[in-house]
Length: 457
Image 1 (cartoon, one colour):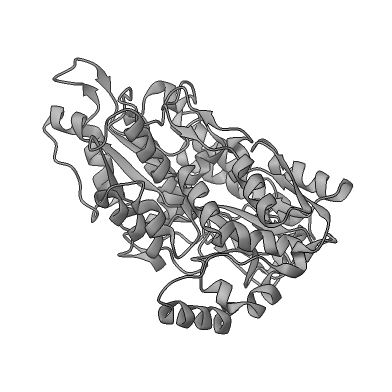
Image 2: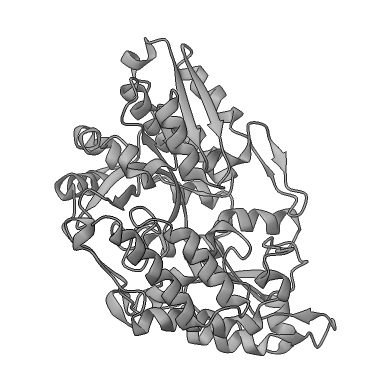
């Protein structure tokens, strides 16, 4: 695909290579002279709540977004932040309703809502110095022209995915810890060996807990498997009618088969979405856990005095396709975008810069368990995790393919093709619980896309 803003990004890269240190965030005096209320609506990074909170399971205390409001007020005392956080249930519908009926300036996690967002390209082009200070933009394939990526927002934080291995369970079964050059076939074989009665504790253990079991992002597991196998489900054209979608390809069906093969080595409650525990607390019955948010997981180990028990291993290597020989791509993030009809776009852009470059915000994001979208992110997390864990996290970050994102890629698109996300959650869940065969799951996906595209004709 043609890459947008290649000249700008090349300049940003050159500037970052030349810079010896990144400048601290500088107050925009023109914006500071204004009096206004900036309304931010949506899910994502704001889910921590306004006040500090302690997770009862992990024991981790996270700073609330009062830190953001207080720091912003120091710099822009005449501009009030009105943060309206929402949950992930029906979040796209909630955002659409709020934007069309209310006063919204910034859409939290709005990059996926491409039809509602202001094009940030002119802002990026005007400030290459700022672009040199961040790692990634939030890019999506759009309905207007699916053949190209559009930068529709800016990531506040990034969330690499790793597989956490419980070294204690591995040791009890006499199984060696894996290295980073494994494949999903290797993961499956290890999961088989670690499912059963722990020879030391006598407790039942399960070899694997897939990502987000019982949660809205359960569909990530299909994307991981499909990418690792080299599947191409979406062939994008210049309009939606020109796109070709094939969930019935051999590789796509094989991805569902892979999920079915993992099912016997997942706990019954995890497959049913009940009592799912993802915390690194020592109370787990899984030997391997696929999970986003590795910094937050590390903080859980610290809170439970278990540093060293769990090992972070990079995602398996892809065995075919465009990513063959590379780690399976995953690019979770929390992003923000400017609402296209906001009358405070200059303030909104300044807030985006503030969230991604102000040292206090970089620390706040890291303290909340995420990787800041800043060239200073490695320095920020180095103060939170040991060197052993910094390396795999930065490896994940540095190996994300250009413009790759979870929302719109070659095996999944939850922006432009109807109820794809809901259908994929159902398909993955049904396969895990044995309610559907892999072929039936793939057919469910194909039928949903076909029905949606037929409605456009």
